[in-house]
Image (cartoon, rainbow, N blue to C red; front, side):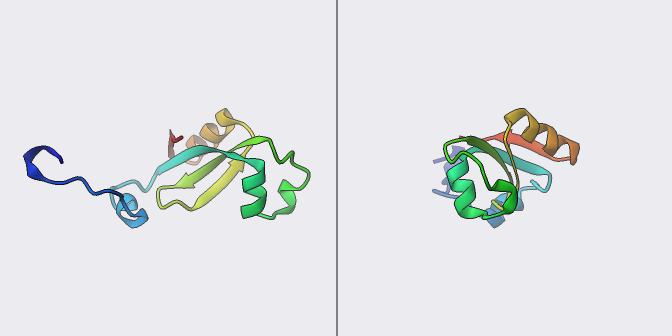
Length: 89
């Protein structure tokens, strides 16, 4: 419960998160190459070690914008596109 008697929702929808003014907010999270290959069967990902760690950049609504092989590069790419990256676990 929040101060003032208002209750905190148990979850927040993608739409509600996007409506919080987070148009430029993106989150970066670690994913396995195996998961990336399963979700995105793209030629660019062929030949990846399935156990490699990659970094996915997601919009506030959860849609994946990019996959990079370096955390710093993921943050730099987001900032280079005038986005505000945050890390999630």
